[in-house]
Amino acid sequence: MARVLSGLKPTGPVTLGNYLGALRYWVEDQHRDDSFFAVVDLHALTVEHDPADLRALTLEQARCLLAAGLDPDVCTLFIQSHVHEHSELNWLLECTTSFGELRRMTQFKDKSGDQEFVSTGLFTYPVLMAADILIYDADRVPVGDDQRQHLELCRDIALRFNGRYGDVFVVPEASVPTVGARVKDLQEPTMKMSASSASLAGTVLLLDPPADIERKIKRAVTDTESEVRYDPGAKPGVSNLLTILGAATSRTPEDVASGYTQYGSLKADTAAAVVELLLPVQERYRELTGDPAGTAALLEKGAAKARVVASATLARAKDAVGLLAPG
Ligand code: TRP
Image (cartoon, rainbow, N blue to C red; front, side, top):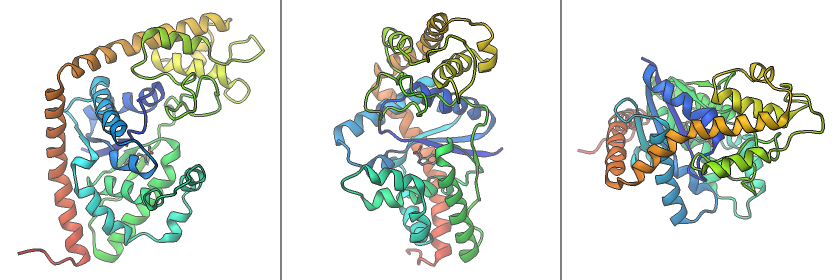
């Protein structure tokens, strides 16, 4: 069975884009592969943040993953910081990564531009991500397009480490869904839907009440034509609605387009489909919030399962680089 690992950063509430572009695939993956999913809270420390918000968002995100259908009896779901081995492997990998490699990361260049204080953590973030992956001997890492370069770096680090110290790590493959839904912002449909946009008017949240979902989708930007056609280049707004409705009803956007002649009915049906899709997830979320001890127990069980694998890989890596074992 292939080992799969992916992570979601708790820097904001979970969006419809996270759900349609990643979570629903994870829910399928867990039944096919030996899957590990992490709420990567350590990665949220790389930029300025509020400690109380981070704690709340981490728990909210974990509950969203459970509510979306990740089953702790089937996959391994955990909070990254509960498995301290990630941080320890991170150091070994930092010493196997060059400054020049990190300097070439385009996401660092983009993100450091907006920060007044650029932490070294933001710079070395891709190394921690490599530790997250390599510590579980992951064969496959489902990620969005924006993480492709980080995955390439992870492979380079693994190959270099293995070349220097022997065969310690599995060299993972990225798996970027080619047919998956890339959901865009409803107000700025050339940008990815994100919870960190300045305004959330174009971002549907997994936990948005139905009235908010309907309002956001009905106010989505379209264009001055009136033809319903899937053409992301020329008609990004309409194409985004078709993508969302298609993903929510398991059809291709082209297929969906053939059933519409008006933007109004496309929007109404998209809103209704999203409300219906999210309803059971929101219901399960509410059940989980009613049982805090139960959620904590599930996360502890996940961390314990993760630690078994992580501690074995870390021990192998420490031995390989020549750290003297205690005792
Ligand atoms: N860097 C990823 C992102 O920003 C999150 C992440 C951290 C991740 N560790 C990971 C993704 C390991 C996949 C595997 O989306």
